[in-house]
Image (cartoon, rainbow, N blue to C red; front, side, top):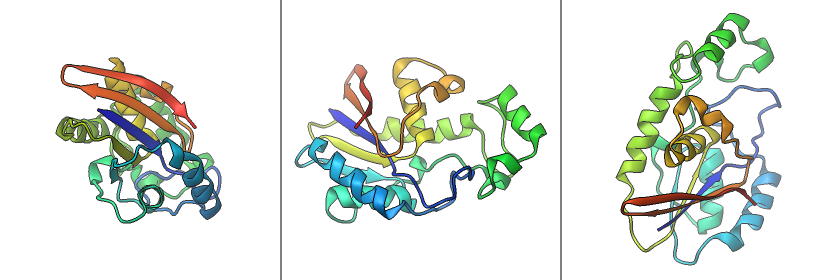
Length: 186
């Protein structure tokens, strides 16, 4: 089964803003451009699924041509007290604590990478393998964790799998065999 993982378009948030679970809209121009660029790569008859956050859901609906089901397990990491603040304004001690334990540090009022990993892999294990391709529109964090899982890397090293806004990854998943076949596909 082909699984197309797509990161949402750039948002309307000012550059340098920390947002994860914050429900921010996609930039309308980027949304239109990304949808037009990605549409030819979407297989006919594909199933669609999206994070419920507007920036992901809008792209999924543009590609599907209408409403799509959502799953909250595909939401970006909850940055708690950091949500909506500029990265440059965050307490240096908290940033350093996160850097010292990327996977385990829970941001005040938010979640850790390991907590997000648990919910994302819970979704992954629930995916029914069929002959119908699946298109999933989500966020950088969940997509990096899926790539990390598929390649046998650790959640702490998932940041190495950077995926740009509006880009796509391709996973081939069959019973007993899963391959990360493409990353940062335009």
